[in-house]
Image 1: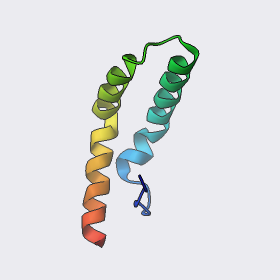
Image 2 (image 1 turned 180 degrees about the horizontal axis):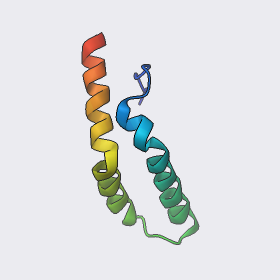
Image 3 (image 1 turned 90 degrees about the vertical axis):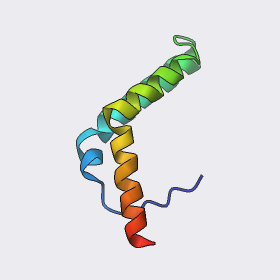
Image 4 (image 1 turned 180 degrees about the vertical axis):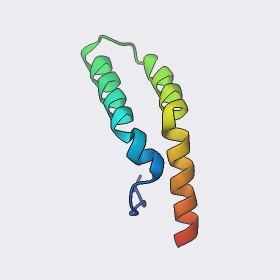
Length: 68
């Protein structure tokens, strides 16, 4: 899927993206090396969204609507 977001980082991205990317990298690595089950990915997604992912998605969708 092509990322069409080409704007400046949103407020939530500025505040939380670094932490969320670290969480992502950790769970991917743990799944790949067998420390975590693939089922843990669902928990990661729920946590990611709760900790800012949903807010970032809303902000990017708002941006996209404004530039169409």
